[in-house]
Image (cartoon, rainbow, N blue to C red; front, side, top):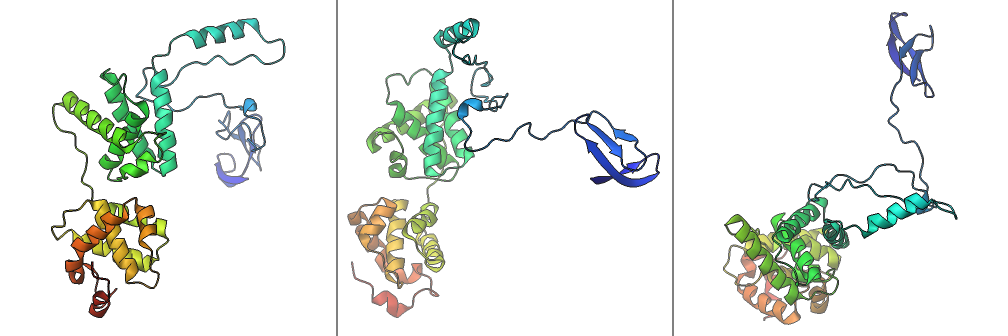
Length: 312
């Protein structure tokens, strides 16, 4: 029960909901305050052990503006029972034979969604990747190219444009067999095609070492204090002309920070977590070493601790 104002009682009274009739009735005088109310709750309850064939949902998925019909197609269901219905089964076969212009797009969007879920990406990145693929597909010039590499490259570009970059190696791990070289070629092809479409260069977004730091530190199980020190160190490293890739700098900073802490991480573990070769981490460490006193926060390590670090 709940309270509502009754025009007969001239005050707030308790009301009763008659779900079968959709009426709201005053509990004191019996006046129907509201009739034919719409029940917006679900008609059913779905349990985990129910079969997928008994899905009571009578509506489809949300509209998709990237598809020709918005994704609101009509699907003829299969007949139930052993005898079956001849008409519906025949219509179903004819529908399957008909060509769906969006069939390729639907399959591509599902593949992108699967890769995005495996990488833990948000829906905005997935939608951006779908949009990029649709724009490339509309140009009808991608036939004969590696589809898996093309979809992975769309996801890589979407991550860059949404300021949530992922390394090519991370994208490659979910790309259904596409290699880093194939994804790189596909990325260059997409950027070229989008540039021809708009008549201007495609904005990819700038990659900073700090974009990868929290994720790499999480993979290594580092404490909050070491993560904070690593993030501050990466920000200060951008003030120096260190000609290394942001990923290499991030890996080298993590190596330095862990060597200054009580929880030292082997170089091999850092290489696995960041996807950067051990030799590349050593070379980046060598470039950072002369600037350690200005990069490492003073609250995290003293001058004596920095001198005790291994010389490159």
